[in-house]
Amino acid sequence: MFDKHEVTKIKKGRNRIACIGDAHRGHPNHVETQFLKAKEQVLNKKMPVVLMGDMVECREPSHPFYVPGAPTINDQLNWYMDLLDELNNAGLLLGVLVGNHEHAIIRKTSNNDIERWCRHIGTNYMDYMGVLDFEYEKEIYSVAFHHGMGSGVTVGGQMNRLSTFTRNFTNYDAVIMAHTHQLSVLPPSIQIYRDKEKCRNVDKYCFPAFTGSFFLTYKEGPSEYGERKGYTPLPIGYNILTLEDGLAQSQSVLLRIR
Image (cartoon, rainbow, N blue to C red):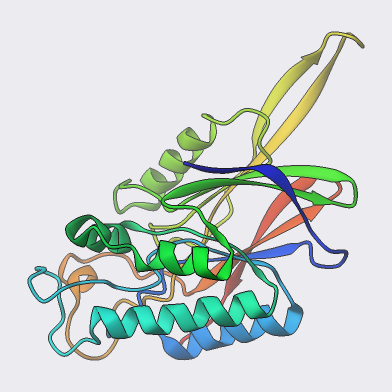
């Protein structure tokens, strides 16, 4: 797990952090128009960004889910490096996770171009999970970012898994997760601390959220694995984490397709 061990100071007015993941660039079901719209919103509103993993598909021809004619992994990574450069040059890139798709090709090849490029441009490479501490208007916010893990295909199962995972973290303000392609904000996890000096209870809120995707199921064209398995259609969009008044609350940004 990545842990920076220092506070990242957020500039005044830039307390809305875009958490964007699961673009799956390189797969035919990637929706470029909506992704470009999300990027435009981030740049125009000067929102700091954490990239949540699975930004590229990374399926080699021998993979059972490889789509013939898909862009090469090299082409996908070139697109990704350009995106990292653009966000970093704008002063907005806070950190980069890898997801299960990128991790699979890293494991097979022992080559990690994403980590290398993050080091080259001086941004935080957070591997599969990382923790960042932010300071905004004299408040400190601790946030865990995790690409995600298997949790079934039902909304209830996925939410239960994230809620259970969130309870692992004490004195955190938010837990942000990708992978499921769900785009939703869960009820806060509330812990009651005892202030022994003042002899009173203190509530601590931790806000879990999923970050959505840019992968459209039931898209016209060849049937991909989500359609073959009969998965539920999922929304396209991303999450915004707002740091304000000592709380780290999330908002889902839905980008319509049809």
